[in-house]
Length: 154
Image (cartoon, rainbow, N blue to C red):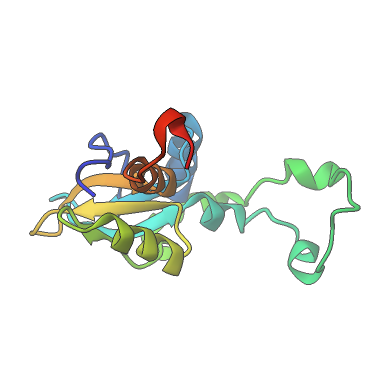
């Protein structure tokens, strides 16, 4: 996985607030924030979907099919309460899921699927965050190794 991971990882401190996390996710246009301690050790994961739960209307969870709804109207501008935004990320983050930098691509892809992740943190032997790889990063690296016939046909 070290061949396809991104080395410049956007992460957040375990002491940061959910409001800070939301701002970082929006500013950097990403969906996963590895949560780290002061020494750079991976402590957990915060995903865009974790924050969206605070504003998602309850009826979305209750309805099997809501494709007929063209617009959610005023609900679309719903804001979380201030007490939610000041909560520390450690209260909402998911347990850490990661792979070692020597992990094979197929195993990494299986981890992404098993844990329903879009991005997978990569750690060194001391559990320090060293990279992150998306499903696209891993999948396209696997596809690139497929043999194709002359002219690019399979």
